[in-house]
Amino acid sequence: MRPAVFFDRDGTLNEELGYVGELERFHIYPFAAAAVRQVNEHGWAAILVTNQAGVARGLYSEAQVGVLHRHLADSLSAAGARLDGIYYCPHHPTKGVNGYGIECDCRKPKPGLLRRAAAEHDLELARSWIVTDRMSEIGMLHALGGRGALVRTGYGEPDLETWRAGGAAAWPGLLPAGPDVVAATALEAVHALLAAAGKAAR
Image (cartoon, rainbow, N blue to C red; front, side):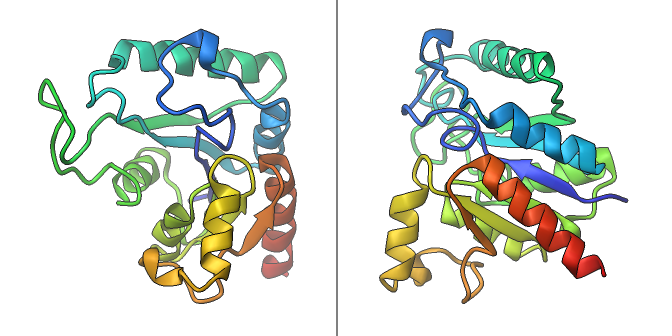
């Protein structure tokens, strides 16, 4: 079993622009490929995990999600980076249409996507990290024994401000110390978490 870095998508690897279903609005951060490539070179799995409730809301289709993810994978590949797996949740518990309005175990911060990836890629969640702009997703991996890096892009800065103002109770599972790493970007987060993992292994 090996550890993974789970990457959130919107606000972490690409700009947070709300519900994005069109390539014209899908803007990958310039540092995204380097972040994923660092994980590849370290021998860890690089896994994308993302909520795509725009499908449930009828704003775009799963086919459109697939187009965006192929574009992301191709863009990363062109820069020498590779995602070992892409997992997404198309559901919403109250806003769904066409059968997507369900309570599921794959909508983050529930751990279904992580558990599925772990089973399919032989991953050790307790040694894994998540890189995300949402504090709730750090709490999700903390609850499974892993660690989390919060990026200041996307929703990261407002989440960090709320937590520092005493709003930790808003995120069940989040350890009292909060994020294990806070970084400006996903690339800086990967550098920091790999350094922390190296120290822990000594």
